Amino acid sequence: MQIRSNYIDGRWQLAEAGAVRDVINPCNGEIIGRVTESGSTDARLAIQAAHVAFYKTGAWRRTSGPRRADFLLRVADVIMSRCEELARLDSMNNGKPLREARADVEDAAACFRYYAGLVTKPQGGVYEVSDGFGPMHSYAMHEPVGVCAQITPWNYPLLMATWKLAPALAAGNTVVFKPSELTPLSAVELFGIFDSLGLPAGTANLVLGPGVGAGSELAASPAVDMITFTGSTRTGQSIAQAAVGNLKKVGLELGGKSPNVIFADADFEGAVEWAMIGVFFNQGEVCSAGSRILVEESVKQRFVDRLVQRANAMTLGDGLSDPDMGALVSQAQLDKVLSHVRAAREQGARILCGGERYVEGECARGFFVRPTVITDVTPDMPIVREEVFGPVVTVQTFRTEAEAIEMANDTPYGLAGGVFTSDGARALRVIKEMRAGVTWVNCYNPTFNEAPWGGYKMSGYGRELGVNGFLEYQQVKQVSINLRPGEVGWYPRR
Ligand code: NAD
Image 1: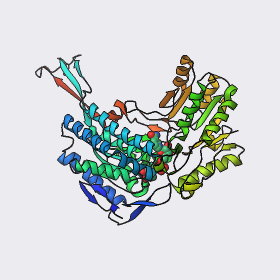
Image 2: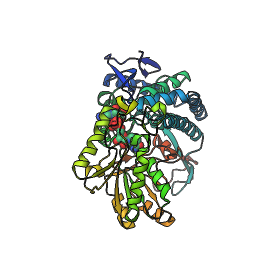
Image 3: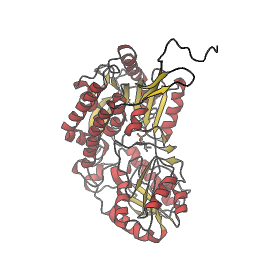
Image 4: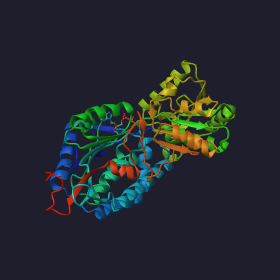
């Protein structure tokens, strides 16, 4: 089987130490690829290439906006022309249902198009300033940050890569990108697309390898100007610490334990269906998963009964056969999810459905867990406080709006949250009080390229997507011009 390589300075090259990693399909444990396994030396090579490309040759940052936009549009076209192939790859590598992987590929293409559009739109403005200095113009110039390192997790392999690469390249940066070591295959294809479309050498560099070594070098390197990271809060903390050395700019998209608040006056069936999407989509391996359902006490029993009925009806299977839900990404993730459920059971919680490894039929060789609904939890239990990152939801009840808000915010995280009610004013009140960066009213989990994405509190800082996501990859230079060079203003006083 061919060993997929790093892409550094416009060339495909194996990691120096010669180590190789098998890439697994979590639905059946089969090896679907082999990739080179990089360490810090390889990361340094990639950083150097990106550094030379930005600071010395400067081909990409000097490429005009419309031409950069054109490149991104062509990337989007190729992605769409290979949609099925890329979707199958992500489905096989991550374990997700094929139609969800297809939606990811379509979203990725749309994201490249969105940032292609923004490149050519004016930013900043010209200000007439004169106070005490004589007539001047001052304007803000938006420039790329420089060398951007980017690290992504395994839950949306192609899409997370795109959320970072599209705005960074649109803004004229050079990049070193490291995907999760568990799901590197679609990123290799994406870099193949960059290569085939003639991106200048050193502009985008791919390093395949684990977090410690390849990843930590990107965070610590003094030659990197910015690091953006999506992954767990714990890793985010170590990245922020490593980044302090040269005070590089840091963007962190981290974990969550997001509340989904359901009032008795909500459209009942709609709330149940959205709650399902909120927590069982992508096997629950979604940072924004609505993993804490808070439901008004008067409708709790009806809601739980319906949720369990719907959860039990979900089909599980090989992602490529397009079941309702696929496999968890790895044995380690399976073990983590099951140990959370086991601990909850031991602490007195009731597991109403799921909660075990699922081994029926074609699922026997994969890492499957049926959708799991848990009640009888207390606010201090780890199952209510810690991110599980699997198809597991707890249900708690509240009596008043104030209590719902307090429970919703009772977490160190602040990534996302939802509210279901037919009372529009109440929806707005609850959302306003929710300490979370991404919120939904009468829906849960939709994301849009136009809308900024990111967390409050321990879910990180910085934003991806939208105009905010573009601005993250830019720095602003103030330019002030004296319109009458002979006039020296107020200093020295005469
Ligand atoms: P992880 O933190 O274990 O790994 C994420 C990435 O960081 C991987 O590429 C890994 O190789 C790398 N890494 C690990 N240790 C590192 C280190 N010391 N230095 C540099 N890089 C290192 O997370 P994961 O298990 O891959 O992903 C799941 C987590 O990601 C969950 O907590 C989830 O909430 C979070 N996530 C957040 C968002 C968001 O937008 N907020 C989106 C998706 C996933």
